[in-house]
Image (tube, rainbow, N blue to C red; front, side, top):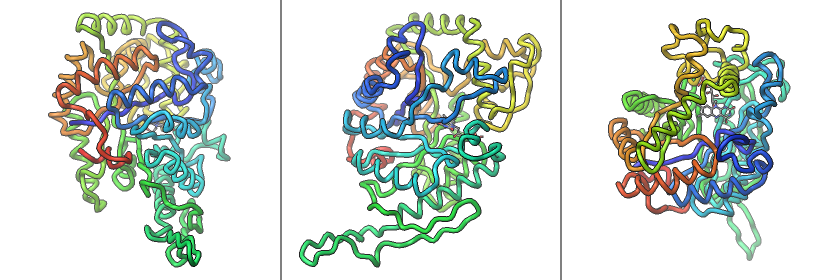
Length: 435
Ligand SMILES: Cc1cc2nc3c(=O)[nH]c(=O)nc-3n(C[C@H](O)[C@H](O)[C@H](O)COP(=O)(O)O)c2cc1C
């Protein structure tokens, strides 16, 4: 069996708001409804988690202006995802809910306390996706002139995780006494200041709230570069990975097994979820036809501009792809942002034109195209080779696609015994680590 997660890549922001199946997304993206529909569908489908992206800025790298960003609604408007988590917990009973927290946006005390509060409110189903933020524009909203260099971001994130982890441990498991006769709420000898002093953070502690049902909320991480892998191997329960085929997936799993052991953990302590954007339909022909139409659309002006926008964003705001001739060679710099994503997109592009690259396949994880049964079969085969832990399903955020996955693909996976048919445990981490 393997796990399923949903990557809400547009976060609690605007989703596909024009074109087929976009429904009332343009007007209603901020309302609870689409998120509640998504969460309840995911639970019906047997998903372990919903993973909510976040980025706090309005980009202006492409063309040196916010014009294209605001024209299409690229990563903006976007609400803060955290307040949606208790709301989604109310609508569901088992689904893990992971909100993104940037190490340059949140002081560790604030993040540790918020995550524990959410763990209480969700009764043990909360998690944080720890990111370092990739764009100068985010950094500039939080007091920096420029974002830090890639390696330093990760050094800071490691220290941030040390502080947050120490705060989560600042109350001993038996600190709360709740003795009504004496009366005594907690034993003060079992609540400890952490007195952390590092290069980036200083925090006295202890946390001013008691541990939640999971004690340590689930920690996710998404950077796949070497420092990203190290951060995940030290601190995370789940990593989101970009691999194109089962052999790459297998190699990544083996790499993590070694890193985990090096950091005194067990390979089974960390799950890898592999990104995929499956195209599914009732028959193989229908799915192939959808894939053909999507491929043809990639030549539209708006699709090209959005793709260039995405590449500029992934470069960390360092490359304005509008400066390059669409029919000239693809610039080969990786940039300083999402380096793994940028590498995946630029792979084998040295002999292509920029137009060929941006009108070509999206290259964001594993591609599956076919009927529900065909894709279920292929996913099972890929996991068999990879020995991996599951898939993270992404895009497009329309109810049509959601239902295709949760009510079309998931039953086909369940029929083959590939995904869960119930949730065994009360908390998110227990379910995530159950197999
Ligand atoms: C699937 C995926 C999801 C991500 N989600 C976010 C996010 O929500 N917010 C953010 O600032 N960065 C996000 N990132 C960026 C990563 O957390 C990481 O900072 C970035 O990829 C740079 O790391 P790398 O060079 O190790 O790949 C995401 C990356 C990937 C691949």
